[in-house]
Image (cartoon, rainbow, N blue to C red):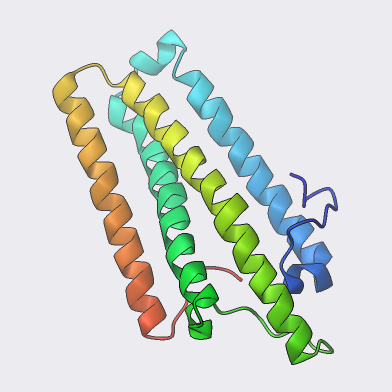
Length: 173
């Protein structure tokens, strides 16, 4: 929401030069997050128990997997970038910005991602997973839920690593 209303702290170099696009994307993301928060609150309503559990839980499973995967993948790729493997992160080139300035800004962006944004994604994913876990009534189904999340996160991150090693992308950026 902060970037959607024009905030600039923590914006990567590309975002600083393309603020209208960043704002538009973040308005969409903010709306999706609001829908997710309302969905989680709906778990408390008795009507949530009248629909098949998989219908209620599937969006939360997907959101949990995406958020947790994002955090792990971000820590690995940004960590590799900071360790000297610059190809681990594809920071867009910004016309008119010197290579030294871009390198400094990209380094700062990677540090901010590792220390601020990736932990937020992890917390978000874990909160969604815990809310879903609480909704599930039996211990056996809760175990299945946890294992399905682990498998989902591993598969998504393996997919991301495979694409990265092949020099391809699967995210907008």
